[in-house]
Image (cartoon, rainbow, N blue to C red):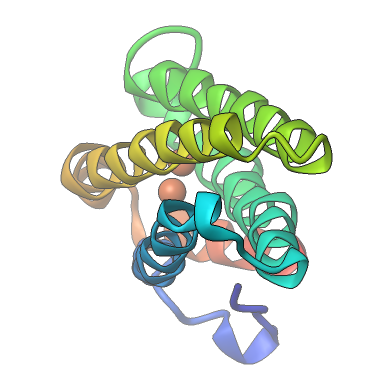
Length: 159
Ligand SMILES: [Fe+2]
Ligand SMILES: [Fe+2]
């Protein structure tokens, strides 16, 4: 996942997050293919790569949305109800499914690992599509230039 530095302070944070979604789609696609052949035997390093990506990269992306974007956008559309609330619930569902997947991989229960992985990939893909298609569109309309800049500055600190 991208790491941002001071030189990225001028980026539109929504563009940066959309780019992270693109990276995630590529990674999820690759993981889907690995999980499809899991019963024929896949290497531990391939499975570790999936676990690590979900734990580190996806978690970092969620944190950037939860700690930088959602609090500011929440001033306009609320956090306790509505689309941000739905996104937060989905982040937590993804975290739970990641925990399940890791447990099943550790237990070498590959068949159920594959099904947990498939559920997670589907949820995460649909989640990012909703953000791109709905939430970020609302954000583009509501947030001022200054607010976007503040969000990007905050994102730089989340690594
Ligand atoms: Fe999200
Ligand atoms: Fe996202």
